[in-house]
Length: 405
Image (cartoon, rainbow, N blue to C red):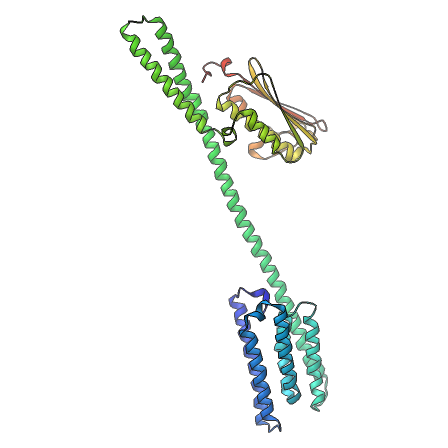
């Protein structure tokens, strides 16, 4: 009958059946004792017991009693009234108080349940006096002890139920979190593989085709226009040019989603606008030039890593990200006014821009690896209490042999 146990478990179902059986058995006991004992109002006792059973069965079979506290209170009032009528006719009816205790505690609010139990126990005790029974300590101890047992049992069950529900919700949250982490790991793995493939295609196929195209262009210039090989060289150069364009198209298709919606400056601007924590300002200096995808990826990922570490560890109030295009290089500067740290005391694999991060991909080691793979440098300037400055400098592709692609 517990409204909090709408989803019945086997244990709760068994307890309900036991409660039904207990109430039916006690009512039958009162009726049988009245008939076999030759009570003057035996048939009235049987009729009253049948009425109590009918009211009880009506409540059990009425869905509103299980859903509405008001309906449950009305049903308990009707059941209590019929039980009092039976109690007036037969002293044996006082034992029906025990299952009533459980019903009242289950269906009534916490502030009314114990009061109803106390009133029921008082009525049970009063029935001894009404029927002229011998008053003994058991007269008071029996109903009161039954009430105490019922209260302790129900409160204990409710506490166990709340703990079970708390653990169930915790398990559901853990399962959901594990699924989210697995999805995030799959997404991160996919993006990492896309970046790796783009870098490999750029550094191998695209660079090789670019070199072949340059060599064929040079051969085409030294050959006479009417030389037999000139036509074949021209066709080979055009084929290399077409395949180079196809390779570049593959590289663009495999670039990070942040770069698919526009330029590098636009991606960095969106990164700063969506940052959490300290205010982030973004600026561009110099004349922007087109950069190969691996360069844009390295600059964007470095900005993301440094900004993430600032938000997590630096406790900064202001952060500035600057993208600078110079004659022979492009640089990215991320400066914050946070708590700073000692770069010499920080392991090279730990996080930058604030403290020891220990956050894997957001560490200095990942930033330095990206920089060195493109012939660039990464420098970190920081001191405790003086903020942090991370600078990534990459030479422009034209300054690196065979970086024209």
